Length: 430
Image 1 (cartoon, helix red, strand yellow):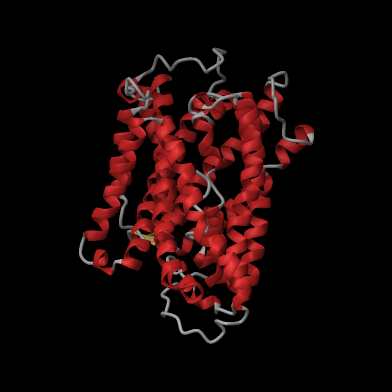
Image 2 (image 1 turned 120 degrees about the horizontal axis):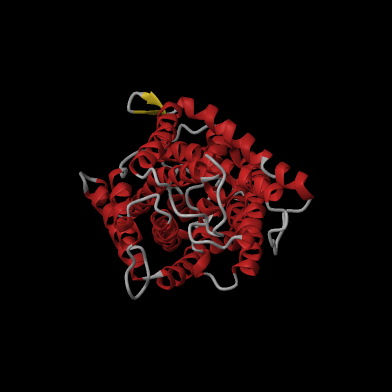
């Protein structure tokens, strides 16, 4: 759910150069991922609820903000989930340009959406095992690059590569880096389906931060050794550039790995996002039909189908535009989670917390500052992306405002209110 390997990071090098790209790849997890992993570790160990971050925010700040957390996450998912089928097609067309013609690429992307929806309806264990083996398989070509590169020192200084069309600069590279390091809270929504979540989540989060950072940095460091120009990189170019040192077999491995990466990420995230409508329906915040589950696998099949339709509608938007909107909406939901962490520390100091963010109350507040500052940067950057004749920031602001409208419409249709929070305690006013 957090990383599909090194795929999707190419534009970072194009925009920043090798040295600064590696520095960004090392610093971003410290400022963005590690604080989030600590926050998720504490809240998921204390409150392993269906719905995860939605349930935490609702418990800490009431129905209104709980609804906004779910709204922001689902709105972000519409753009986030369209990225992975898009990447699948990008790598597919590197090997078979035929799919780039007409609507063929769009049909392939739609097929990915449908296949992953069906796998998720089959159940969580199928998804988790598939994702694990996909991660191992897609990492193999990059291990080969790291092993081959020392024997190719400076060999690609004068290499002739295909012209790139990327316009990403260093700031755009940072934004793409943030996207590559986000998603840590997605694993929290399936806490009731995880064995011993109080012990499992904190360990998994901290180990994963290190694994992901290493998987991003080492392949680029290896290619830097070969002397290949930074301008040779853009989304999807791992295939052609890897072929320069490993030949056609490595190129095929990269292409297949890129397709597996996109498929695996999409597959795992369907599992995460579909639990939000389920939890909201169980709380009375959405119509009861979204709580329907497949009898054998207990998968929320109605929620999966409804979300799949929304994801399919966003196929075709550009990669950079999707990333910008995704981070803007996701970042807003992440800020609410950090606020919930601090609020629960003061409101429920006696709540059992098998894992705690170090530093006491000050640590619980301070840990949210670096991610919030990076979010402010993404807001400023979103002014430069356009969607439907308006800035991405304006479009994102409209999506956020729509959450307020949706809440009050929902409340008007159900004035009696919703079910109590997970611990059955009365809630504060919105």
